[in-house]
Length: 159
Image (cartoon, rainbow, N blue to C red; front, top):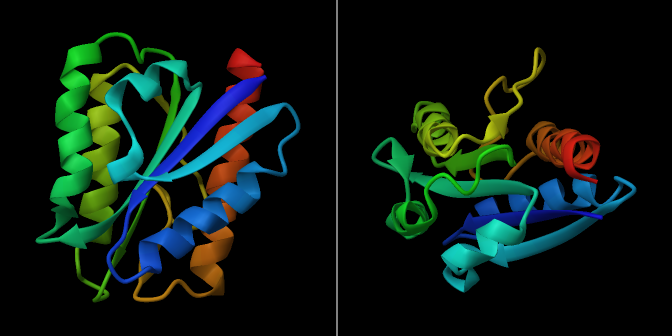
């Protein structure tokens, strides 16, 4: 059975609500075990046992929160060991021009450096789902779709 970890950092609850929607979509995939955790509860070695890792962060100054960056910085200790795992990202911000897309891309860049497989989408939020404030139905739908698509890919590759 393929394993997916969805980790997030949230202060207002908005990114957590997005993570819950990602998990809801992923849980519909047969042959996939889904774990949802706040980033503070994730140890870098846990990433090794996952086939898919999805990360969500609120946006500070156009990038991810320091708490998410800390996990990615610590992942240097396992560099080269995440190759071939499925990755994905999502973000929330307070403003329409608040940096959601740059936050998602910063997370994805770290995943690509690890050799992870990142799947975009031709429709919706191309790099990963975003929300302005509390996620609306469009954002929640995009999150569920990310969870489902990443889960299906993980099962095909690792299940």
